[in-house]
Length: 604
Image 1 (cartoon, helix red, strand yellow):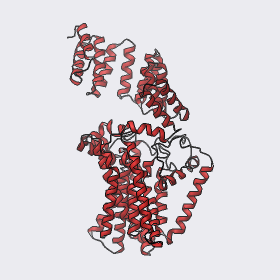
Image 2 (cartoon, rainbow, N blue to C red; image 1 turned 180 degrees about the horizontal axis):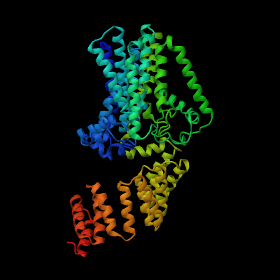
Image 3 (cartoon, one colour; image 1 turned 90 degrees about the horizontal axis):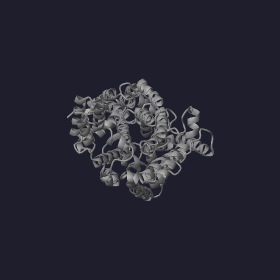
């Protein structure tokens, strides 16, 4: 595609708007899920861990190796400076905005495609995906999906011209590379084979040629893309252990019909966020967003919207192809995150609307172009108004993601009635020293939604701080039952039972840890606690030493090993472990207690 001077100006404006809208994030910190995915996950702190990133489900138990490798590259370059990560996110968003223009230009004029790209650059619903660093997966999935679509379109155009040069080979190969990178960035890119069919259809409408004829010219490339997507699903299932994951609140145990009825009202939220994104929220959980797997008036309204959109797409497929294209793009990409095909962890998250919003801005771009054709200058004015409103809302929303001190209070205000809102409000109350209010709020979160292990774990942590060991143990154990993959909760349950004087309960939890995680540090730590409580310091020392050898840079592990060795009178290990503690934490106040213990047992 040869770009005119006007188009180059549009793309420049697009990049400047995208970067300008998020320039302030260069001074922001790691926020919310960034802490787990980036700050606390050592595997993304160096590209030297590339084998782990390519072979383990590290992203909340999900497998997104390309996204994690990009984060590892950022950490390596910036030495963990969050501002650099934010700048990369902003640059990726600017790149995606440019690709939106190139895609839309195939069905819209310069004005329509320009309006679509500029609106995409400043659309407020994108703030979560760009300003929250875990949105990197959304940005990369969209980037590679659009690159695959553009390469596939180029391949189709060269096939129609009878070209068989290296350029066509590069386009074909680029389509597959982009598709593979996309699905390895996030699962939403699995929609790419459907997007490629849409591209062929739109090209056929543009040229007056049957889409079937265009498809036949390079059907082998499409089949290869589909095969690659299926192969990735197979690889992902092997790594993760299945196609599904954690089910969204309110959808547990529901079949396709129940999930469809529950998600029908969410269609109204999609509509609002795409076209009237005044109110934004980082959370859409019950009861802020009610979940009812039964017919409701709001669900009926959502179904009516779906039917009307389908009818509009069919009627516009020849008269106004961009309308049908935009609606089909939205429907296909939303299907991946709608909990209909495979249940996901969230009912709705604004970051998951990043790729579907491409279809929404294509619709808005068509509206601007049609208005311009009907009323001179009106289309430009309409596009300018939309971009101006988008800039204003985006600039006022971005500061929410500055740091956790700003984010968590805003989350509570954004989603009143949500179990997560009560949960976060409880944590804030605990941090402020109001422990009674904090406990009440967290317990209320459990009343709203009792199946999230993190809420039970939070309450267990706070009860343990007050030495309410039996209550803490029960909360940890429930968290462990809800998510048996989180072995740490099993250990904390066992330790709390021991401190509450319930040896049998601690043994039972430890037996479960042994059955599921026989080589984990949590099982070994639990055994060490049991042996110590049973009056066997030498056995406890042996278990703690196993933990320390797995965590050689953890002064806590060496400290507990030294403490047990001193109690057992095993001087050699006591001296060695104390030396490790001294090397790792020479300023540790408890180091004097170890040295005093060594002296008392004649181990110096």
